[in-house]
Length: 107
Length: 112
Image (tube, rainbow over all chains, first blue to last red; front, side):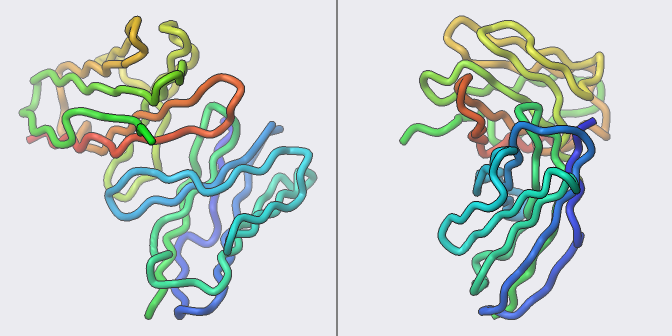
């Protein structure tokens, strides 16, 4: 499968710090997307990066993609308590999700 | 802006009963995906439809079936429910040519 695998599985930081989450996948992709999920709630699309892009920014989010290493990273800068959620990466339109990184931002 | 609508939001069923979950995609979205997310688990792709035809199949049990109707809404039918079917069921839609999926709020199914 084209599953993405997130790393770390859990991350606890203080408000204001940066949070970096990584994702690895197994096969060739056309694009990779990051989603956020608050506990027991729906998935919210955060950002999409195409296979020919290396870096993309959206507000406090920065995503990188290294297709040679089949990996992506999501950086959240100046984190807020409201960023506390699980973050998933998903590859291509089949949207096979990885196991997610649970981010806890302490106020 | 209109979002993906799922109904019901919560459903409680007993073992061996049947359940039908409904999904109404965003207007002009022609593709619907269904996902199952067990407690503490990542979302698992079940099945997808494009223009009312099944386009891809994931880990959907044989006890489940789904279809997409002429108005693009989709229904997931689940029979002979088991305790392990208790999960959050998400529907997502997107328009072909756009890579972004938009997820509904989910239906929480509890099987007792």
